Length: 189
Figure (tube, one colour):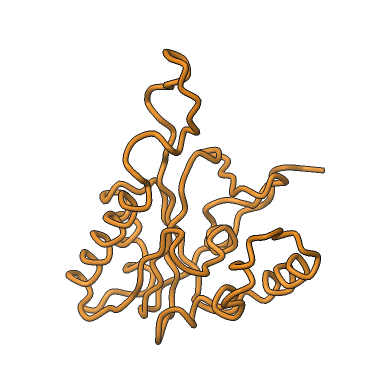
């Protein structure tokens, strides 16, 4: 029996949690039209400073379907990085909390590969690509569109339940799934 778009989405979200992610939201792999306008204006104002690489691959940045041939869905995933122990409280270490332990790029990428493998084992020939700060992906915009949170005034993605101590990652796949809806902004005026 073939799973419906909703059944498949629910199974994938459950498997994402088993793989160690904190949350998983789904959106269509389609152009981010309002983000394209916002990014273009931001670049024209020079807000990216000397980070000229942000100008590269504009079209791919605003259209996740260009990153994976036949892409239909974007899985946005969050991975908690709030440490169990605060090193600054017991020493003179001055490290950002996300920098504790092994490089998150490798940790999260392994989990994404495990999730992709599980999806392929369950649903057959699904192709896709995993992203952890590794390509021109507007991860906050995709995560907000997929319902993981809203973009706060400080430009971070915020979750009412989880705050902002999490990494974002994406799996862009050629499987059509039921998409989630964005959440409302709770920052107020």
